[in-house]
Length: 443
Image (tube, rainbow, N blue to C red):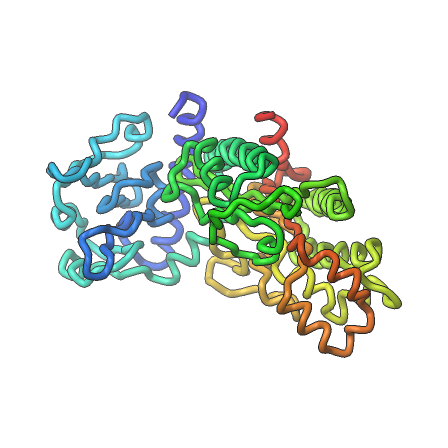
C-alpha cells in the first residue's frame, strides 16, 4: 500500500469504527467479531471450493485470500486481527502481513481457527459472518443480528475516499482486460480464448475476478448472464458481435464494466453507437438528490426511442412503448446497482438503517437500487438492448405484436444484444465516470 493510499486507508478505518460504534451502541452490543470465512470442501472430496471472503471482513482489512481470520472490535479500543498462519507442508500458507495497514490493528497469529476462542471478549458480541455451531461455546455471541447488519449495510452505500480509490484502481485493471479482449475478438479468437486474454491482461485468476466473466459472441449476447465459454472458433464471416461483461478487483473492491462490439461497420454498429450516446446521457443524470428509479425509467424511454429510430416499432409512441411494457422485452433488467466490496453491494432498497425498504417501480422487478442518490455513492449505469428469443416469442403472441416490424427484428437476432456499463461515483456537484476515465488513462 503506497503512502497516498495508506493515508486514505487511515481515514477509512476511522469511518468504519464510527459506523460500528453507532450500530453496536444502538443495538446494545459491547463488541463485534467479524469472521472472514472458512474453507469448504467439495462433496466426497478433499479439494476445497475457491475461498470467498466475507465482505464485512474486507471492509476492515485488505485481506481477501486467507480463511479463518477474525477482526475483533470493541469501541474505544484498538481492533485486533486474528491472522491464520497454520503449519502445513501440503499447502502454501499465509505469512504474517507486513503491509502498512497492520499499524491500525493488533495482529495476532493463530495456527488453528479454534485458537480464536481465547481472544473472545467478555460481554455481548455481534458476530458477523458465516456461523458454525462450535462458535456458540465461545461466549455471548449473537450470529448476524439483523439490526446491526441493516445499519452497517445502509452506511456502506457511501464510500470513503479509500474505497473510491480502490474502485478507481480496479477500473484501470478491468479496462486493460477489456482492451485485450476486444483485440482478441478482432483477431477471431473463441470465447474461451478471449476469456484468457482478459485474465492475462488483468493479472487475475478465475478465482480472483469479482464475478464470472460474461464473454459472449453472436446470439449468446442475448443471454444476460452467459458464463459458458465456448471453445470453438467461429469463421470470420459468421462472427457478428461480441459482448463482454467483466470486472477486476483491487484490495477486495470490484469494478463492473460492459462493452459491446460489432465485427463490421453496419447497422448494428450504428445501434451500438446510439446506445453509447444514450448511456452517457444517463450518466449525466447522476448527481446528489436524484431518484435512482428516474434513471431507470429514462433508460426505458431511451429503448423506446431507439425502437422507433431504428424502425423496429411503428404506429405507436415512445411513451406507449414504455407503458405497454414493450420496452421491457428489449431491456428486461435494472439499469444498475450499488458497487463496492460486492459487485451488487447491499441495501439498494433501504430507506434507513432500520431495514425499512423503498419499493421498486411497478412493472420493474429487477431494479436493484431505489434510493435517493447521495455524494460518495458508487454504482453502475448499464442500459441494454437485446433480442431475446423467449421474450420476443411472448411479445409476438400478444396483442402488442402489431406494433413491431418482425422482419426487421428477425434480421437483428443474430447479434444477440447490446449492453454498455460504466461505474460512476457521485460527487458534491455531479458525478465522476470512473470507467470512462480509466479507458482514457490506460489507452
